[in-house]
Amino acid sequence: MSLLTVEVVSPDKRVWSGEAKSVSARTLEGDIGILPNHSPLLGVLVNGQVSIKAADGTTAEFTINGGFLSVSNNRVSVLGQAE
Image (cartoon, rainbow, N blue to C red; front, top):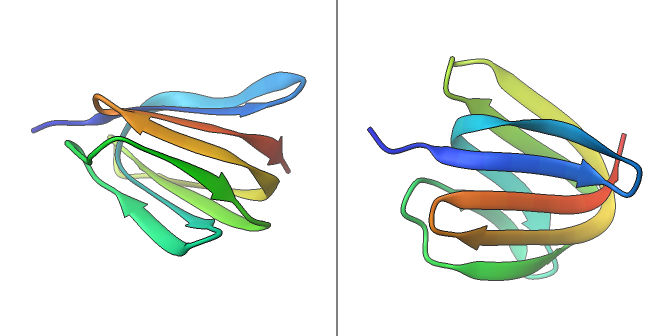
Protein backbone atom coordinates (compact mmCIF):
# COMPACT_ATOMS: atom_id res chain seq x y z
CA MET A 1 0.00 0.00 0.00
CA SER A 2 1.33 3.43 -0.93
CA LEU A 3 1.55 6.13 1.71
CA LEU A 4 2.12 9.86 1.70
CA THR A 5 5.08 11.53 3.39
CA VAL A 6 3.58 14.59 5.07
CA GLU A 7 5.07 17.65 6.76
CA VAL A 8 3.13 20.47 8.42
CA VAL A 9 5.49 23.41 8.88
CA SER A 10 4.85 26.72 10.64
CA PRO A 11 7.21 29.72 10.26
CA ASP A 12 8.96 28.86 13.52
CA LYS A 13 8.76 25.05 13.77
CA ARG A 14 7.81 21.70 12.26
CA VAL A 15 4.35 20.96 13.63
CA TRP A 16 3.87 17.39 12.36
CA SER A 17 5.66 14.97 10.08
CA GLY A 18 5.19 11.33 9.21
CA GLU A 19 3.50 8.88 6.87
CA ALA A 20 -0.19 9.19 6.14
CA LYS A 21 -3.01 7.54 4.23
CA SER A 22 -4.71 10.84 3.35
CA VAL A 23 -4.70 14.61 3.84
CA SER A 24 -7.64 16.99 3.53
CA ALA A 25 -7.53 20.78 3.49
CA ARG A 26 -9.43 23.83 2.31
CA THR A 27 -7.95 25.88 -0.57
CA LEU A 28 -9.12 28.96 -2.44
CA GLU A 29 -10.73 26.58 -4.96
CA GLY A 30 -12.53 24.57 -2.27
CA ASP A 31 -11.96 21.47 -0.15
CA ILE A 32 -9.37 19.01 -1.40
CA GLY A 33 -8.50 15.45 -0.47
CA ILE A 34 -5.05 14.02 -1.16
CA LEU A 35 -4.48 10.28 -1.49
CA PRO A 36 -1.33 8.41 -2.52
CA ASN A 37 -0.34 8.92 -6.18
CA HIS A 38 -2.21 12.24 -6.39
CA SER A 39 -1.19 14.43 -9.31
CA PRO A 40 1.21 17.28 -8.48
CA LEU A 41 -0.35 20.54 -7.35
CA LEU A 42 0.31 23.78 -5.53
CA GLY A 43 -2.64 25.29 -3.67
CA VAL A 44 -3.28 28.38 -1.57
CA LEU A 45 -4.79 27.48 1.80
CA VAL A 46 -7.52 29.53 3.42
CA ASN A 47 -8.24 29.66 7.14
CA GLY A 48 -9.57 26.29 8.20
CA GLN A 49 -8.76 22.74 9.20
CA VAL A 50 -6.11 20.43 7.80
CA SER A 51 -6.80 16.82 8.65
CA ILE A 52 -4.21 14.05 8.33
CA LYS A 53 -5.11 10.36 8.59
CA ALA A 54 -1.81 8.87 9.74
CA ALA A 55 -0.54 5.46 8.66
CA ASP A 56 -1.26 4.08 12.14
CA GLY A 57 -4.96 5.02 11.82
CA THR A 58 -4.89 8.07 14.10
CA THR A 59 -6.08 11.45 12.87
CA ALA A 60 -4.20 14.71 13.41
CA GLU A 61 -6.08 17.98 12.91
CA PHE A 62 -4.63 21.47 12.74
CA THR A 63 -6.17 24.90 12.35
CA ILE A 64 -4.30 26.73 9.59
CA ASN A 65 -4.47 30.49 9.13
CA GLY A 66 -3.54 30.71 5.46
CA GLY A 67 -0.55 29.23 3.69
CA PHE A 68 0.32 26.82 0.91
CA LEU A 69 -0.10 23.14 0.10
CA SER A 70 2.32 21.34 -2.19
CA VAL A 71 1.90 17.79 -3.52
CA SER A 72 4.48 15.92 -5.59
CA ASN A 73 5.68 12.30 -5.74
CA ASN A 74 3.65 11.20 -2.69
CA ARG A 75 5.07 14.07 -0.62
CA VAL A 76 2.71 16.63 0.89
CA SER A 77 3.96 19.87 2.44
CA VAL A 78 1.63 22.17 4.33
CA LEU A 79 3.25 25.55 4.91
CA GLY A 80 1.30 27.96 7.05
CA GLN A 81 0.53 29.36 10.46
CA ALA A 82 -0.69 26.29 12.38
CA GLU A 83 -2.41 26.34 15.76
